[in-house]
Length: 202
Image 1 (cartoon, rainbow, N blue to C red):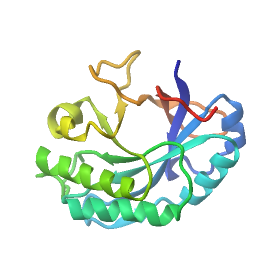
Image 2 (tube, rainbow, N blue to C red; image 1 turned 60 degrees about the vertical axis):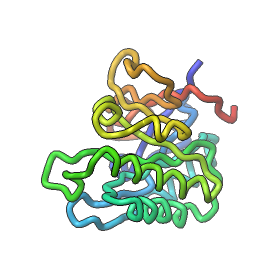
Image 3 (cartoon, rainbow, N blue to C red; image 1 turned 135 degrees about the horizontal axis):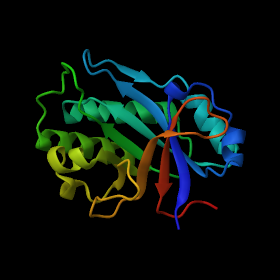
């Protein structure tokens, strides 16, 4: 069996987490922050504190993701440290995911190699695990095939984005983001829908 979940960030605005929990959603992956693709500045998601506290209070299992545009392991480490500082020791039931995506514009990450990106992901995940949290990698099929050396990251949780009736990725994943246009009671915008194939706290 699989558990139903969502992933959200400030793009969803204010969320009625009681309504979300009543709708059958059992977990949420929350946006923790992001790095800009042009100037490299880092930002904490403005709704993180509210989403984290309220989703947990409503009984949901919670993890985080950080939208990275790191170009080096040192930048990836600083992103992880930003997340950890924002968490301030709060408990999570699910991993903190490294979410690096190519930008279809002039970006500071345009020339990054697969080896460099893999090193960034590993540095982020190692920093997260040293702080006592689970770590993971978010990717779609293109990233899995052309950007990452996933064999070097196999010790971390994998979160696949593939909008289809069933995933075609031939290896195990813990989470599957299967839609980017879901409708969930308590959220006024479209929202990403996910399934978890690992046990939750229920």
